[in-house]
Picture 1: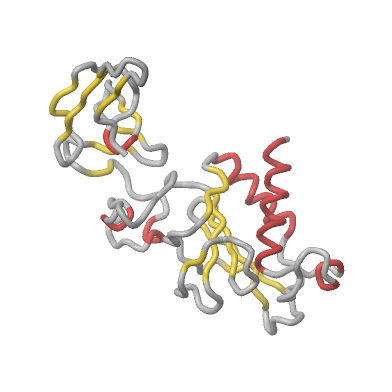
Picture 2: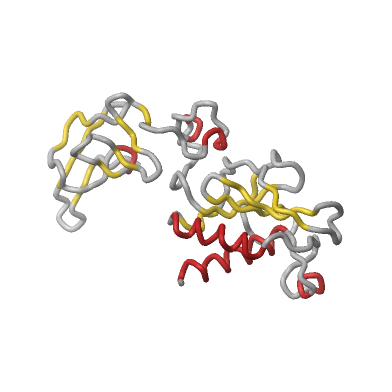
Length: 219
């Protein structure tokens, strides 16, 4: 959120008080430069007047981003200069670009979001930067050739942030390329016969991709 008041927790002394208008322009600042955070928690650049959020910069003077959303229309908004469909109360954009573990109800990509927790009745997939990746069966779910699909929604509100480091994004892509698309078996959880024989399901595939990505990232 926006820093409006900085207080010394030991003495109660107010070190800085900032007031903004609706667009993020500073109306008053009792201690300019005391701390680096600007409107909406971005990093304020005093030389340009922009607020930096990593993937994009925000210009409060014109009340908009200086660049399009890096994932384009993948965020589900027709306005590529917008932010979380103009609903920051209910929607989030943790880093603009990141590696996320997401889950939804079984079926088509428009099914309801789920928390990525232990529950075998769900579909897991990864969002890496502006692309989604998930293992699905080529034909039947019992035992068939697997394939990596990428039609998933990128505005899943219950995704788990794995990393916001672009280097981890690269490591995840390398892991996906290395592992490829193994045989699909819906029951191929770690330790099961299908898993031992080399098959994976969407959940075990995503888990192994992230484990391999962590190894690559640490090299």
